[in-house]
Image 1 (spheres, rainbow over the protein chains, first blue to last red):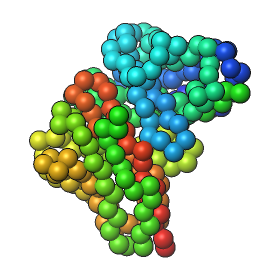
Image 2: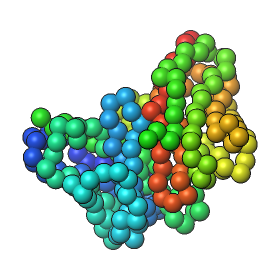
Image 3: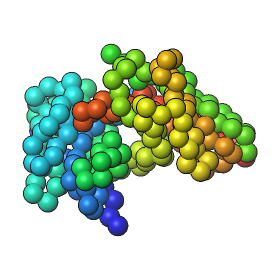
Length: 115
Length: 111
């Protein structure tokens, strides 16, 4: 049973550049959420995708955007990178069919460093 | 705006004893509370949840207690094992689709 996978594992970008992070949900899951975890902090909710639509968003600027594909995989795009965007980006999946969409399964994350 | 707070950055416990991790929240509208465990270089792993209409949920060595009047929940691990050493996150689900996490408590279980 494949868990949540994310790519790449690590990424180094320069200020002002754009980045795309990828996530494949756990088998059987149809909902994907993205989180940003800064050092020493808990994960902060960016947004959630379901049925290829963004259905809720946290307090993140429009530079952060996403996409969900028909196979439920997802991408997180960040434009005009700032030094403060350096963080661990976590993808989490859940199932709308179980009635427990609050139980999320996380991937290992992508460590983004902006220089 | 920290709606979920874990005020203890770290906790050290002897193997075999009880570990108690605490969490406070401010929003009465949360419908579920969850605990996640995180090892280095891995994503958080779901441990246990509790509905806002319950006051206790138990799963093996892990028990979560919810005190709604105090807006406080705790995770008890009995008995603690060295493999339990990790960062524990308390989280709250808003009833929409958003989950809010605390900053985490690092648990050290000494052999």
